[in-house]
Image 1 (cartoon, rainbow, N blue to C red):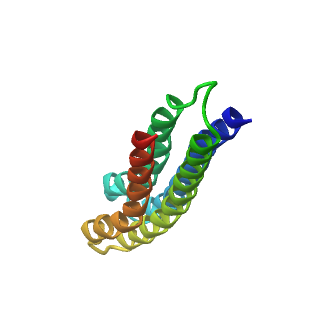
Image 2: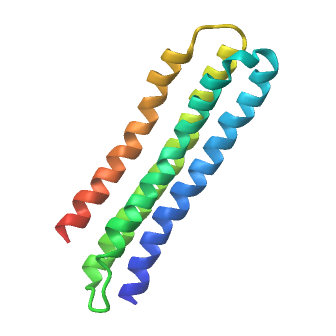
Length: 147
């Protein structure tokens, strides 16, 4: 039972962060397609902004490697509960962080497509939702090193 609970936490970390990144990249990618029709010479800026929401999926992947090594057949219920909790937390935070970051990126892409010089500002603003995914990953890392 304990092993199953721990693996469920690891799976949720990867699944939720991956779904968030896939959804986020789709949001910003859709905006890029529309903006590309208006201003095709800014394709590099569009691609750069589209890639940002993918990082949260990578954080879930890092979480997988940090947590899976802690799961043994002799794992205690306390350790399994901690792995489940931190995996779920990191997954949910990465899910929402990626989607919200994508909306910032999509707005920036639309602004660039409309002729505004918004790339730098959008990059700075897009970092703020990402910060919470980084904090969730740090909590996961600190938890995994204390188990």
